[in-house]
Length: 183
Image (cartoon, rainbow, N blue to C red; front, side, top):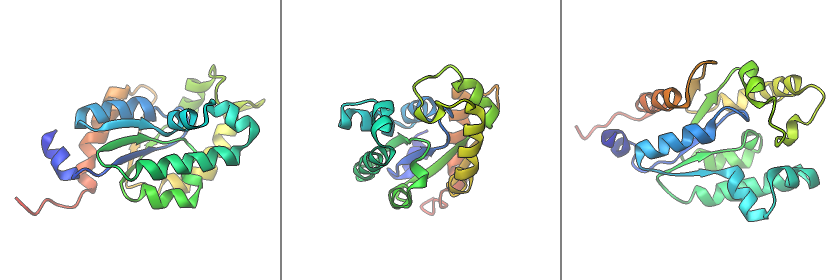
């Protein structure tokens, strides 16, 4: 792991993907492996606003998106971070200017798996609808081309554990790094 840490040269890792993809769980594991600090943009937005994501969304999704961009801008000034982002962070073009300073990893989970993971989660404002599966499908359709701009895509199967995904992610990072010419 020290060789990978050295090759990364302190570059931040930004995990993108749909809600329920496991970005926070995977991000913590990857951060521990690399000796990087872990942050979750949704948690930081909640701390900054003194409200839950649901409460902020209830008053204004645009206010949430502005706070999310502000948090991302502040995090991008640091090094050696693993950052789990909110599912919609990719929808704001300004956010890409921050994401591109790091290595962007799409945690790609099939929509049926997401639905299964989230069907009892009442904290997701975008899923408070009569048909959460259709909403997830629509969101993924809207965001897929944006997620696909990631430097690395990690496909997740229905039986993959967070540990397995984290290990695959770490193993895949060297495939997108420039060759180490110092050796």
